[in-house]
Image (cartoon, rainbow, N blue to C red):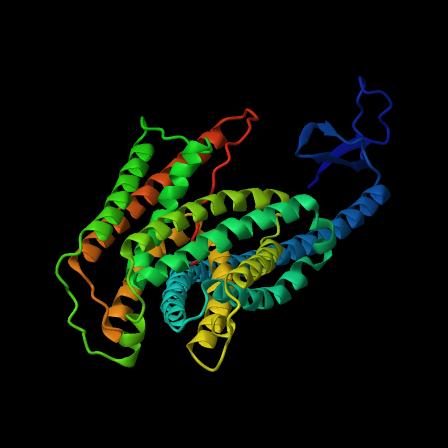
Length: 457
């Protein structure tokens, strides 16, 4: 803002020279106008005439009016901006609160949903084993069960596999993929599941299901033999894995060698009970077959890791494995037994077993396990494997009058404790290796580690 200085000087009309002032009667006064800025107080404008001064005053007034209107407008804008900022802050605070509420709800959902899914998977496994035991005792061939089951599973998996990976089918059907698909189907289904079902035929469902807890341990020992894993006895996690392995082996020995007293009091004889006990019990042969099935599953996990390298699509890989397994078991089954009773299906427990095992224990459980692995990690589904043992034992004891002995209980406790000890060590080892990989900036070849996931029985 500029200021105006008015200086008044009186001069005489008769004054000629400044050094010789003369007093005159008619004095004339002159107003000299100066303008200066307070920012530069030592700079003063030259004297202005009255006309120029009036023009300057008018310009100053108009500028002052514009400045005041601009200032008012700016103040109004600032008020509006402040109000808008306050509204935005309130809205942001509300959004943060909503997000926190959603995170809390999502946290509860993320904790509960995988648990429910894995419990459902174990219920499917338990139901499949009970129905398979009944179908075998009805005279159905084990290889026929596997053939029909995986045909149903392939039909259930095919729509989603074609929907998601239909463009990859042609380029992924390479000789290498076909080779590893054949090996995966042979080791995991034809041998692993086939030997398990033959062991189930000679024993009970509870007895056979206990041996499923040995599969991660056998896989661990086999991985050590082929140098895919190391013991790492000097670390805490390696020691936990070794302790867990010995506990599982000890539990299996207790179940096999020690019977003890019967703890179940549900001995009402029904037709189903007679069907369950109709076959001869060959415990020694059944135990050997169950251990051999664990070896088959151990090789299956390793072959799965190789299949995922050449065929990353899990949906397509599982579909091809089911198709290949159906072909393998059908050829072997026809070579072993061509009788009609071994392959026939009717409106009975045989058909129920094929549909339930194929649609739920194979297809639905596959997607639930994949989803749980993506949410919680590869070792998460295996933590729920002991539940199938509990479910099968309860169902057999209550509905089928199967003896639940002290030896089975003690062995079950040892195997469950060993499995959790092994999984604890496996998880801690994975976390420590991931932390070390994040810290390190060097590019190194990663060690191939076979993920411990739930198996299909």
